[in-house]
Image (cartoon, rainbow, N blue to C red):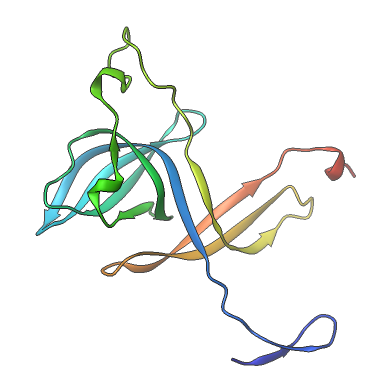
Length: 163
């Protein structure tokens, strides 16, 4: 570790800051490309405005997961391009076809926007402090290793942000 001078003038050592990003939400799986038991599957994630965003799901499994809607919980994710990695197919939860929303007249689960959780480093903040960029690295798996992620944050106006 190297020492550097802090804004207060004291000497400090640079520490290692762990970062990660994970997604919890609905995922629609499409076609897969397989190599042995490693599958790269086309996936789609829908945001809060119900707009589709393409992604790739990397998964180790004996069999390719069927196409359809799935629920994922705390799956590591990287951005640019969006890549998710699951080490075991048992962590995927298939949404039954009867309630996946494919039948417009039948019952369906409510669409829920994905939730991202993680720890990152603030890279930039706008002058009005209403938006900024947070970045970090997340470990996907042994083959892909560490991948960078970037999230743009925006905050609504409130009394705290009034000039």
